[in-house]
Length: 211
Image 1 (cartoon, rainbow, N blue to C red):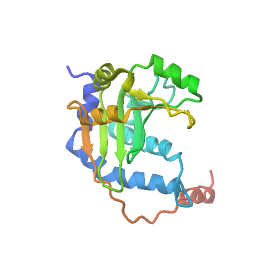
Image 2: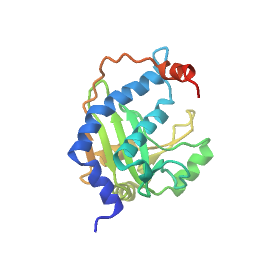
Image 3: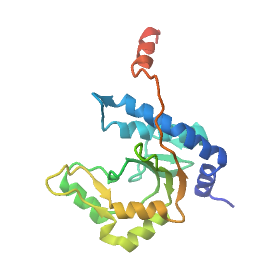
């Protein structure tokens, strides 16, 4: 009998689901960047908005009753689908991917010492310049295998003298995750389109209506 994780993976690889990801996700992420841009620069809050977009996709795909976003207590997990914890991560270009956000160097060291992969990862790799990237589902088994083989090279601490808030996956580890035979790969052609989008309109509409 198919277990819940297998059901999630199978659903994400259905042709209609893949088509939806390929055609809709680039536009939504482009809108997210417009929402989070000030003076031509994209703010860090874009990561949280992208996460909400992915969660909304999961709700649309699996149903609101199957997706839990509150009271998530598992380390690293951002959402649960059918009770299965998932971590959501996005990366633009060749930037680093945070394994965890930390407040200081001591917390980062503690995390590094005790780290073990805890859940499957949905990783979205965005590259508007080359148009390459995609949505990747990295099973926990893939992470465990690479963590065991790479050991101390799997994660890396920030360089001394830089912002210490976070431990990143080693870029080599990420590359190996993405090409692993068991990773689900949905390649996306990242192209921006001309969008007439008013970032204030929905809020103005709320002010215009009685609540």
